[in-house]
Length: 413
Image (cartoon, rainbow, N blue to C red; front, side, top):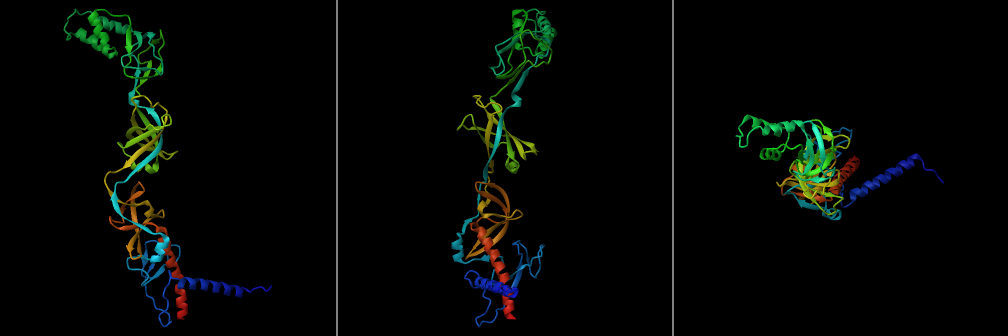
């Protein structure tokens, strides 16, 4: 077998490249009209130079970009002065290009996040006597018991209470309440937390009982019971802790990227594994002003009515927050945006096969649409399908013209 010399290989490669370029130049979609009717080389006028990477930068003189690549010449007749790209109707039909008018609509989006049910810290009450004493007997309550306001928790004995109650009896029946001794004794008993019913009964019956029945201060569930029959206690000792579960919190961890869409008052739907199909409704109460760096999430507090006590503390929940605005804004479909990471572009349909790339600034997203704060106006038409192909077509045409141009110069020589 005869080995080909390096010169023969180089000639072969050059012939193949020339054939490929010639085929592209002669094709229907990329015809460049490089020669005139008589067959002499055509003289084309360069009107400007465009950035080889497709950036919105043009030059009137040859130049290089930051990577050392030559700017691509744009010849007269290839594109109009507005920077539009012309594509044949056949290619538009083959690529399935679809457009949509830019309009105004409300932007709304549901933010989903995991959450955990917690007790409303404002609805927790402790029973901590303000005097020294002893527990005579604890009522039929334990941790987990649901109590109503006024239900007896325990009966207690306190010498200070009995002393102040006895002072009420020093005054004769019918004594004016403005008497210093009566007002002083009543005030001291109230400061000790003694129920008014007990004070009124002492005044009415003219008798001081040995013990006082201590009532539950509110409706709720007993979270903690530290009281035992016969136990002594000091002022300030916590004997019971009671929480009202009729309203609970759901603490949701929302992703950092959704933080800008959140604000207090937004409606929320909450579902749980314990009650499939049931939706609990509430609203955003607080968006906490700090981020958890480990998870890159922000804590959001949601208040939920819980009248039947179905939601229990530490229960897992799925949260859906309705975000958005009721004010219509200029929007385009999300599919219309070409996002390179550093710039966002939409392609405008100028009619007659002419398309123009346009830089835009984006705002909120929702319902498959994105707000456009600048770049396009209401009523303009944008490409929503095939925009990437049009963008690639524009770059391909420019690259092919850059390749074919040297052939025209060589043939002219």
